[in-house]
Amino acid sequence: MDGIPGDSTAARSGAAPQDVATSLTTGALARRLGVSPTTLRSWDHRYGIGPAIRPDGRHRRWAPHDVAVLETMCRLTSTGVPPAEAARAARETAAGAPVEGRAPVTAPEPAPGPRSRAAGPLPLGDVRLECRGLARAAVRLDAPAVEQLLATAVGTHGLVVAWQEVMLPTLHAVGRKWASSGDRYVEVEHLLSWHVSTTLRRYARPVAGSVGASAPGPVVLACMPDEQHTLALEALHAGLGERGLPTRMFGSAVPAEALIAAVDRLGPAAVVLWAQARSTASLPLARRVARARWGVKGARRSPLVVLCGPGWLGRSDPGMPWPTSLKDALDILESVYSEDR
Image 1 (tube, helix red, strand yellow):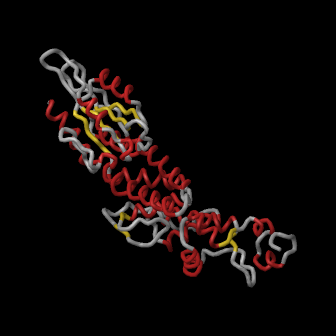
Image 2: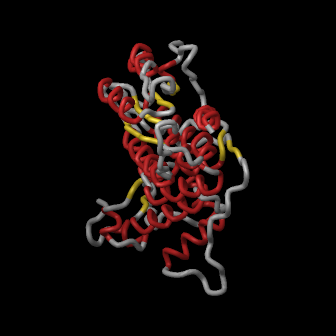
Image 3: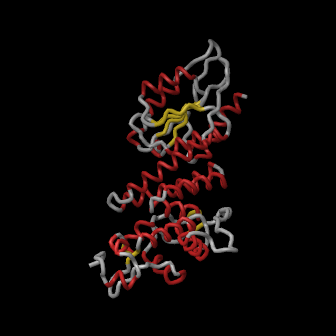
């Protein structure tokens, strides 16, 4: 059996007995890395990135050293390094240092707008190439790679494009995979959501509101009571900060009375109410917020209420905009301040 001292399998492969005991099958390694078993076999054939343990008449086994090489290769390919260059760099990294005279391999800057329809671990469809790398990193639970890819996307394309064309398609793909696979990939969804949230908060820039009874107040952002989904609202919060607009973010599941109290205290120029599901969208509460009044007699003000999220589909109000994209929501809210100026 594998792992017994003196076993002929270990002797033939040159692997230590403990490597045999902790090795992975091709299928298990493919699931761990977020690639297909065919891809692993192709990399072995083309680039010599293969298992150290090759027992006669048995399935190949991948030792910890092999896994480390492949993790490095996956991290490089997910950032746009060609597979042949990534394989060379992965082997050199495993050996200790780059070969003398060769420059280290670095990820190229993402080309503007490249798209991919290739098959992958998640049902992505026609998306930017960055989505595929982000999806693969998330599936293999490679947190450093996810963090780097998200930061690169924002730095290269700006927050709005990074959200709409990189983060959101990948999050939707994870959600579809989760829904169709019997609760598999839940851990992928949690890890990806956490790092998307972290990235959005990192790029949010708090802006101080204007001072004075006649000055427009901040934009209040709140999820409806019982609504826990906040990522899209966090993206809007970060985008408003990027445009220099003052905000107050209250996050998930804001109780109705707390929301009304906050509106009364702040006198906001606009209130954004997020509802992911129809069950959490309440027009009576939205209308109650819209009826809020403050200011001196003869110049009393009320907020613009903006309904955001798919939960408001079919429940909109003529006086309450329902933007369908992050850019549209930002443009609507920025116009409120432009009119005041």
